[in-house]
Image 1: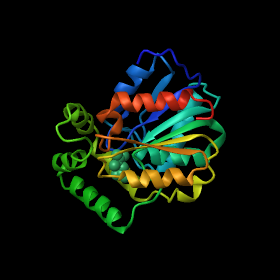
Image 2: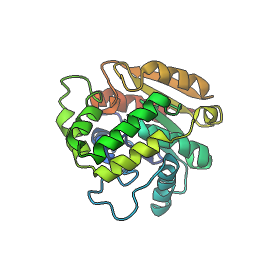
Image 3: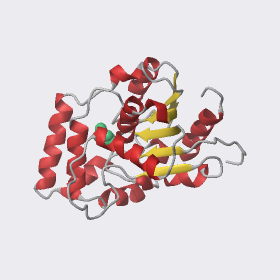
Length: 251
Ligand code: MLT
């Protein structure tokens, strides 16, 4: 990306499940000349041996984002980009801390809560993890993340494999119990970009398009040849979408 475009506020990335902030490597590296790009580890992901309590919630993760900004003395509103679980957290942050937000990017995510089948699946995964099926569970979770044959598959699997079982189990509970964020969509005041992957089988692109319609300043973009981790499958296109959005007045 050779343009000298700049966005003057920080851009904060929120990762998906069961990953950590390293999933944003190609965004941090390539966008840093244009914007102060930061990534956070949510819910103690990225820590190998979690000290003490691991119980978490989407709300607690949104509070972590606010703490992160406080600790970095970031008082001006920021741009937040959350993918999937990170998107659930970004929606919660937009609801709980509207004055701290300048622009919002929601990638491969949804506002709806888990339905009964999804909740049962989370419980089953938690049980299997407790029974020692960690490797198989992580493989299954990572299978639909990227387009088939992706050169990034090993890197992403490695990140998932490094997460502690307890943290994954706690996050499954948080995902299972998250609230319906749909009523909050109409209250979002900031320009919002919703990105979906045309090949995302975890959260189909049609859901992203519907969500964007419910956000007053919402716009929608679909990335072809991208599955659930659209930022990893199509890093250049993803980065261009973000930078164009951030540097366009009014989003
Ligand atoms: C994610 O990528 O964060 C997960 O697919 C979210 C979920 O399981 O709901």
